[in-house]
Image (cartoon, rainbow, N blue to C red; front, side, top):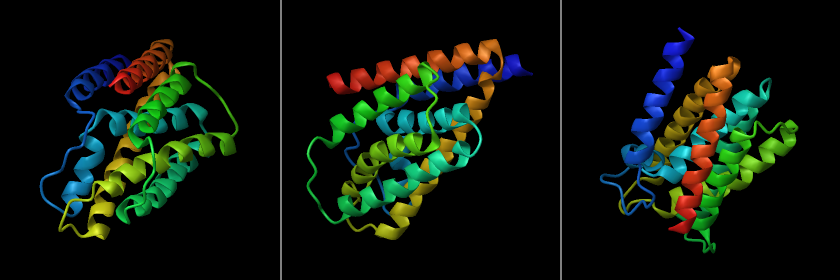
Length: 193
């Protein structure tokens, strides 16, 4: 059963990563659906949010709940800044850098105290949230849109948590290191533009 799960995880990663686009030029529709699709339509958000869940699973214990919760909470504050038109420089490069950092944390199986892990993901989350909020479609109900991208983010964290559980075996640890390295490399590619 574990062998099937690891192969399934590799297949899912191979299907999802190449199809995700970096830029988010606009999302069809408005409201919940547009918000839900935003994190799913860009490699930057997709990889970072899965990596947060994966790293939380690796940290174990209360981190499995509190690290993703820190991400979602701070992402919401970033979204408010984006929705209300705040100007923050270098948002996209910072998001790409967060993909690199989160990938490296997974690849090197970095263990830190819960407060440090929460602070790391919170820093990334603010910029991801800002991007979500800044790209609120015209004529969209902000609350519904926000609900959509929060739901997608939680779903991606759950995917990361599930993938992180696979690392219990030797093959699973290898998968974790490879997934982290691929994520970090994708982040470098996003930074290069």
